[in-house]
Image 1 (tube, rainbow, N blue to C red):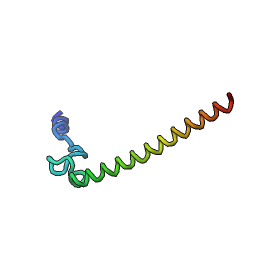
Image 2: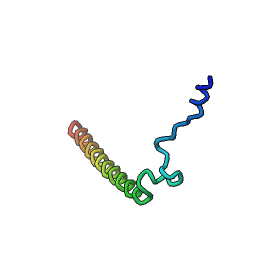
Image 3: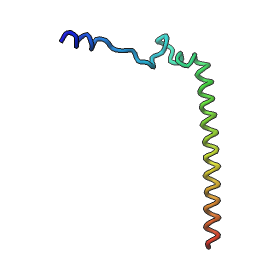
Image 4: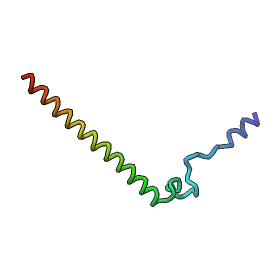
Length: 71
């Protein structure tokens, strides 16, 4: 039973914990590096969403065209 007590006392550190304990951006190389990563991520999301919007509009135009041909 004493070995169980020792196992419970040992709490492993979270792998996502910040390096210095205070700065949550330390994982990413600091605040500026995190901002750059966020900008890159937002750019990728915006690009993919714009492509999806174009595909949606083209699909809508094609479906309207098909409906008008059968009327």
